[in-house]
Image (tube, rainbow, N blue to C red; front, side):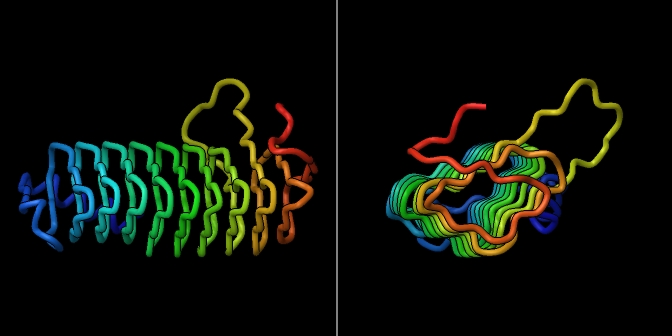
Length: 225
């Protein structure tokens, strides 16, 4: 995330934006203010903005996709490299091909059926949801719920970090809910540095669990807390 934040901050500080024709395959699109749309079936280089969302239509291809204040929405059959935002969610349709990782600070991440993420999936304050998706570099969060949905395969484990104490906190903090769904596999350790509620389906397989006690369940959905 540091590389992403630094690069976007430098663009914002410069006050410059270099926008290329979005219809030209392989060209970068860099903005400070405004959203970006990657058109269906077209190929792009890096897509970057500071204040605006990024939409990738069905079958679009891009390299790094980055924003600071905005969400990233992708249709089916989209291929990218690293995808990151600070204030916004990330959502991919079916059969996504992400050669890098997915990162956000304030926002959730969702990848639909048939997805592949070669590296990791990370949030700070946002839920992570996978459906029949492969992740090669593990899952990390601080305050987000995690659902490793039916048929998903996560290599590298799951790590829920202890929140950093920033000033005074009032009231009881919300407890994240972690669900390992039917026929899901998590290779590697599941490490919880804070209190969580952990549900593991009877058909799922996981690595060693530290910091939480798994609650086994049957059926399509875990019990309501």
